Amino acid sequence: MSSFATKSLTTAATAFAAYSLVSRMQKKKILNADTAFVRNYDVSDFAVARLHLVNNFWLPDPHSPPMVAAPAPPPPFPHLLGPNVMNNNLDTNVSLVDATPVTDYSEDEMDWVGIGPSAVGAVGSVLFHHGYNRKLSLQEAVRRSRGLLQRHREEIGDPGMVVGVSIDGRVVWTEGLGYADFENRVPCHAQTVMRIASIGKAVSMTIIAKLWEEGKLDLDKPIQEYVPDFPFKEFNGKPVTITCRQLVSHLGGIRHYSKIKKPDATTDDTASLLKNEKDIPVKQPVLARYNEFEEKEYYIKEHYKTINESLNIFKDDPLLNEPGEEYLYTTHGWTLLCAVIEAVTKRKITDCLKDLFRDLDMQNTYLDEHEPIVYYRSRNYRRDKSGRLQNAPYVDNSYKWAGGGLLSTVTDLLKFAHVLIYSFQWKEGLPVGYLKPATLQNMWTLVDKTKKNQYAEGGYGMGWCVVPEKRFGAWCFRQPHVAYHTGGAIGASSVLTIIPRERKDEEGHEAPPRGIAVTLIANLERAALYRKSVEVAQLFDQVDVSSL
Image 1: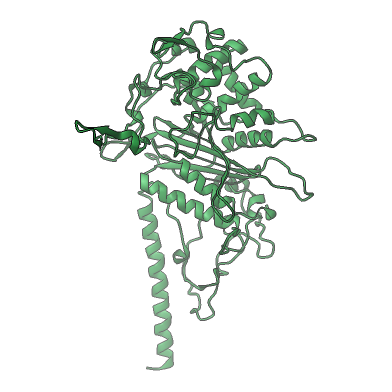
Image 2 (image 1 turned 30 degrees about the horizontal axis):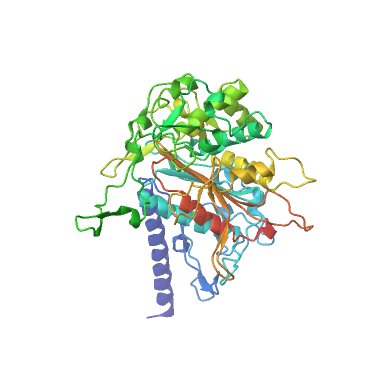
């Protein structure tokens, strides 16, 4: 065969391979359009693979055949790619010299993905280092975190999720994954508004803390001094006292959505032992896991105009625990705290919450009301018993504004986190924070008797779940101090995780806020987001902040 014929066949084969690859990618896109999950692109998706991996860097392959002129799809989110470590035919809109973005992208396009120019400029070219104390580029932390969250979404069948991450008070990543409206294919983005459920308890704790600091509220007075209509309680025939301090830590004994105590799925084996007629310990049969979302009070559709009306739901029910003696998570306890706030401020709890949103510049946080028009509000979903996706039923959350009746975005939740981290780390010579450091220290300190069992890594503080810092020895695992709150509502799940850390600025001074904040909100029930937020935080804790 002549050299000309050989070259012609080689060219034809290469062109056919490129055409097949493009066709295959188009088919992937068509298939991908009919699913709720956004596909992650990888190197194999590009038109022709001209790279090879050398010491964890993608470098041009000198032995690759020449690029064939074929329509190559643009890479997704090109302004996330950082320096052009891919082949030169990819338009990444990123400068090769200083890794700063070219200004071809509008601010709206930047905001849609959620990485602004300052964050894009910080993206480094190193993929990762091996060994202890390795540093990641922001690009790599985003890539790994996105993959981690996509896998979790695929496991649970989540229609849509929004993620937000900040490092030392600077938002470095926000992004929507999947759909805010599954039926109409409306994608999630950084400004998607979703139910944040029990994160509302942490938000409302800020109001209580402010009143406590100002001396307007005594956390240790009997609750009846502020809400005289709430009846005095007894436990095992003895009069008991309920205080605000107990309520903010779920130690008041007031029930949750069930009128009886439910078995705790985390009970250790020793508590599940019974004795038979021969006095030999035997294990009791395993009960089905308790599903809180089967409780009828989750599905209240009646609108409550006042907090006093909401108190009627539970105020005459007996206590399930002796106050101050045992942890029992309760949303109704926070409805009682709403009544306390109204009594102290002489204003409606809804007005107090709106004032807080204004003071903290949380412009996209709202009461969860059905009637008002809320731009970018997500739909809510759940899975039926067979696992099929369906719309969540309508509910009215006016009976629990502070305990789980708010809507928000990841950007607003990160603003809220920054306010608290700054207040927690404030020192003389800096502008005063919204709360005093001592107040945050109390809020983020583990309260006695709030652990579920002796093996639990954390418990509850005041309005926040808390995992205390713990060190096991040199070169061993170090558990950082974590303050977080999860949320579960009809058709939604959420988490806000804060990991404060010590860091010094260029002049050697500690400049708050210092730490990692991660928030995830999803439009699906029981999405189990806390551990994923910690895994994301661990990745971003490795980012080299010197370039941010």
